[in-house]
Image 1 (cartoon, rainbow, N blue to C red):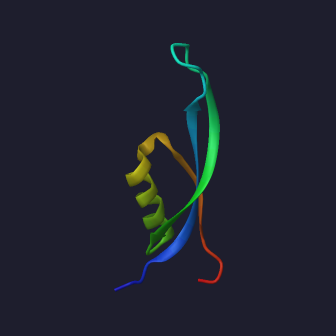
Image 2: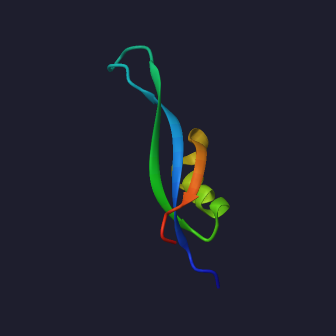
Image 3: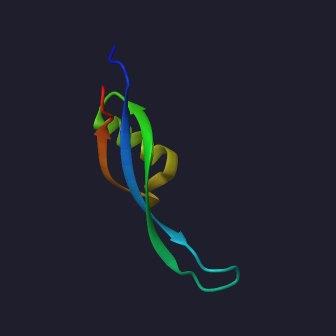
Length: 66
């Protein structure tokens, strides 16, 4: 059995920054979150499972020291 390792996954998404009852104004935001997985593809899959396909995964890197 493979052990899971921490991966930093960088993702981008569109956020509506308009005030209530106004037409939408979208800004592109990005954030980095840590997911534990057995491989890079597994960490990306867990990211999509959590946030759905409205996020775009830019890169996934193994945390230093692992």
